[in-house]
Image: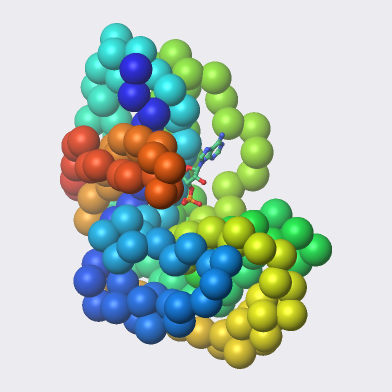
Length: 179
Ligand code: 3AM
């Protein structure tokens, strides 16, 4: 059984801009450059047969390439209990229609629907200590942060393996956008 998710890759120039935010700080576990991504759908642990069905349905997704702009920063679940520090994605039509097509594909494959709202973001760091003063200052300093725009021409299926040092992601398959 693999722990899977569907995500967008972040191209190198945009990753470099995100890396520029990552000043070492105790209790802040920054995401490694090669692991930066925007999750479209977390699938959880799935059996091999279900993984095959999901891959088939993802292969059949019809969606056009679109432009995506990353900017702004925030925390999950909220400022009172910051656990994840992220850069936002502007929720434009292209992104939302791909996310909906991916959702329909995985439900069609037999997985239960996601009923939580989609908050498009790229996780920058996991926060191991509630250093709320530092977080507040970071969010204030980066309120106008822009990481730039890029064209999304594919999405990917990833496996996530949980390790004591954090999750390690492996790209399993690429799905081009070509509608
Ligand atoms: O895009 P990010 O890095 O925020 O937090 C996990 C990560 O999201 C999320 O899926 C991505 C790849 O692991 N994730 C992990 N467990 C999850 C769960 N039970 C989850 N998302 C929703 N439900």
